[in-house]
Structures are given as C-alpha cells and as structure tokens.
Image 1 (cartoon, protein in one colour):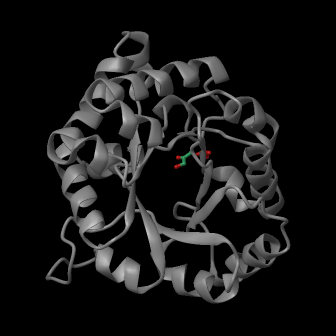
Image 2 (cartoon, helix red, strand yellow; image 1 turned 60 degrees about the vertical axis):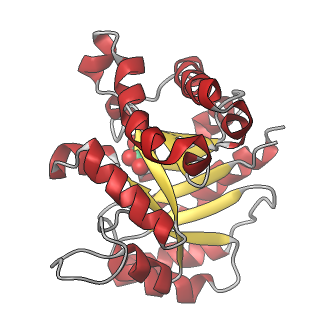
Length: 253
Ligand code: 13P
C-alpha cells in the first residue's frame, strides 16, 4: 500500500510575522499518523519553519533547487546540498510556474532531479498540461514527455525515489479543480506508463494531485485509486484548511 502524501507549496508568500502565525496554526493541528506531510516555504524562511516545527511530523521541502548538487558560482540559486543542510527532505522540481515563467526545460528539470537525488533529497517531479494542450487532446503526450526524460536517465526505480505531482496548469490558482475522474484518468495513465517499464516499482510511486485542492474537494480526489494525496498551493496558507486536507488523506482507505 502506498502512503498518502500531502504537501503545502507556499510559493512566494509570507513574511516572518505571517509565517510565525501560520506555524502556530500548524502546530495546533491533529495530524494523521499514516500520511507523509510536508511544507515548502520560501527558502528564506526554512530555518524559521524548522525551529518552530520541532518534533512535528510535518517535514520540509524546497520549492526549487539549483541544477548542481553542491556549492558553486550560481548567484541567486540554492543548492540541494544547502536545502538538505537546512533540514529539507524533499524538493519540488519542474513546477509549472518554473517551467512557464523561468524557462525551465525538461532537460533542466532532469538535472535538478539528479542533483536532488545526489544529495539525498526526494524530488517531487511536477508534470501537467495547459488548457490549450488539454483541448487539443495532448495531455497524455505532454505528461508522457515530461516523464520520459527522467525515465530515460533513472528508470522507474529512480523516479520512485521521488514523488510525481500531476498538476494540470489550468487548475493551478484558478479555483478550477480537475474532477476526481479527470485527475484519476491522468494518474492511472501515468502509472500504466510506468508499469509498462517496471510494474513492481510503478505500484510504489506516490502520485499526488495539485490544482485548487481544498478541504471541500480533498476527500473526493484522494479516494480515487491512483491519487495518493495532494500538492496544495493557496489552501496551504491556512493552517486549519491544510490540517483538514491532511486529515482527509488520512481517512482514505
Ligand atoms: P493552488 O492549490 O493554489 O491551485 O496551487 C497548486 C500548486 O501550484 C501547488 O504546487
């Protein structure tokens, strides 16, 4: 059985003060035991989160990382080794905002995935199609291409050291959620594609859904057979809402 995973991506939100409040709210939550929980704060505030979370089951993730594992002359970047040193266990790679706004290609995403693994971080590989690509019936092809570069280099076993996040671009920050059936269809397609290469490993890979996940739609999404939890943006900035989403993941059998 795969463990569900619920991750909060705080994106570029928060100040020291607002993050203190959010952390107090998180520390007041009842967390389900059987769910992997993590937050990805802005890098600047990882230390603050680490100190406030203490023994909490909520783990830390970076939102992105450099494509090089160790230190180097890369102004403005944060290396996977530095994220690890700061207490992170995971890092997002290939979020659609990084792909579309910062020009990250599949090659760059693959280098970041490799650098993360080399440092013992679990990369969360984000994949997903735009509205235009969905309308043109290209979802399988687009998502397949985004996975392919990682599979060619690392195989399914390498991918299984990380997590896959299916985040349809049209559902991110728009309030438009993929229906549980729409999301399940893509998750099942991803798993089937992995299973063709290595069925045993494919059954182990956590595939989480992202795109306007909220407390009110979480249960329906997480009860689908191939949806192993969520990558939550906006709703993760509210501790009670994030807590409710985590508990929804804990209630799914
Ligand atoms: P929203 O939950 O705000 O739609 O964001 C999803 C996302 O991008 C998580 O990485």
